[in-house]
Length: 214
Image (tube, rainbow, N blue to C red; front, side, top):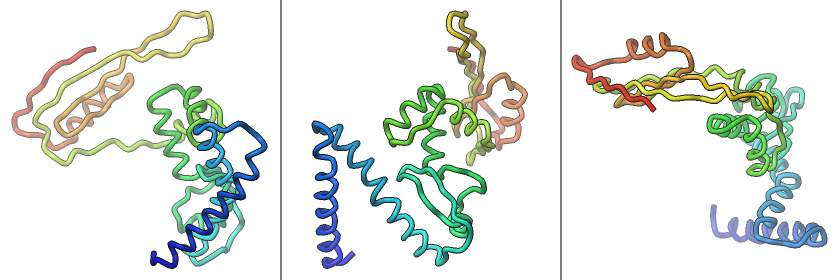
């Protein structure tokens, strides 16, 4: 970006900020948190989706095909079928690749219900627990492949709590994991799958094995 382009971008950015501030000024008492969320929401609804349409056309060179709508971290995006195919968007999906990755990463570390709450707070995109569950269950996760010889491995395990109806006793189930010097893999009630994975990876002539249990 040359100096003239930087100057113009700064001028346009200030003009956009003044308009957005005037629009939001009468609505609420500002704190820094509210300013952050207001700018995120307003940019998504006013500016970012339009910018994306420009990027879509410029990067693909086409606008051919039926228009699709995708929910994204930048708001609702309109993209043609041809553009979506060129840009690697999955057929029939209604969410953008980046939003999908946000959902999967959050779901890997907390319940689907809490994922929905945190996702809306972080990205401004409303969702629900059932949508998160369906998204995860549609995935076909590939097992990792190590790039170095396995010289050490250990078997680890622990408990996961299955959610039950309110008032009922909690249910706990065992999971197991294989830790190696090149990475790890975990499985729920799939001991054979873990064994087969280890046997399919390149191993040193001597492998040091340890047992860990938490």
